[in-house]
Length: 433
Image (cartoon, rainbow, N blue to C red; front, top):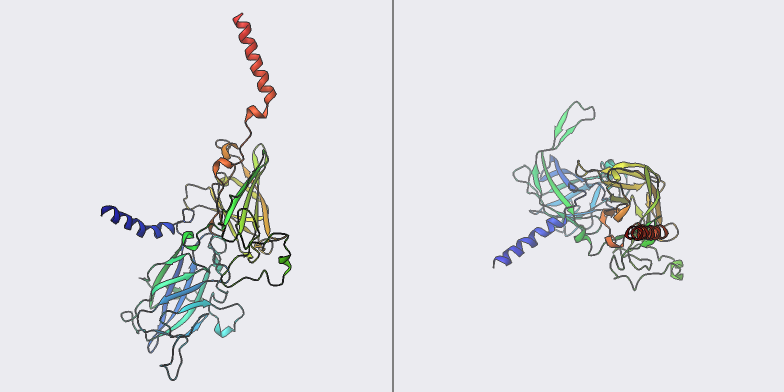
């Protein structure tokens, strides 16, 4: 009986553990509701969504937010967003609400909507940048007028069961919690006002909930070894093995073959690893005080362009990055005492778009790093990353025993080694005699 109880406790704790990212321990998406004014039967609130994740962003087609009303609330109107369904509003005779569903689903408006439908930080198609890449673009907001909700702090009931798609599954939202009211400064910054009531909802991401297989893999090579360590076979699962397309297939010329589908089903190029994305790390040159590595990211999905992509690498020598040639770079310090993690991302209007599979479906850069004489060595795979993340998801790494190691010194200089053996034997014979 005791073992069953312990097993149950472990299963309860598992989702919480799965949502923890050691390279971004404080990363989350926080949804904040600020009640700005009371109405005849409810309130008007500003809802703000902040992406505090350092390297995970929300790509197109954007976020989808849902919840369950605590009472019989309705949405009279929205600015900066809209619900996907109106629901049954037949009991209303005069003014018809925007949404009467018990569980509304809200999406952002697209860019270019009329000015009277816009709200601060709205209308980006639900796309949110990561906090580490562009903090100003990591915010989305809309205004909602709620009816049949109560008209005071004591009568308003907080919504329940929040859900967030970003754009697919993976996010788990906690309960809404009342927090101290948000303070606002007037444009001249001389007067401070505050919300009438504020509550927060925190949503965290788990790669295990998002998909059962990795979405990327890593391969290695080096100048000192002819061996190339490829991605593992079926590193991202082989469910699409029968549906993949060879790179020279005539099907690629069919009109519409590259059009994304509503279910985001990939159309992959046939490879042994069957991953949408491969990251290749090549140790290129070894100088006296520096060494150089080349990073190449290849897209094998014919239906996906990756906008504002991010690549996070954990490597012991990233504390001495000297120059990154074709990517932007930002060090990440989840633990202030350790500086071994950094984020690479594309330069705006140059290579911040990773095109679909094909001739232009790759981006690459070289990195120059200064050696730390106390710790630097090329032996035992030291020159290769410990972890690699693409767009916030951890990539499948090769097994450590497959890394391109330095050739054995005995094999590297067989003539010198044999000469040394002969000399030793000669000295021994002379000494014996």
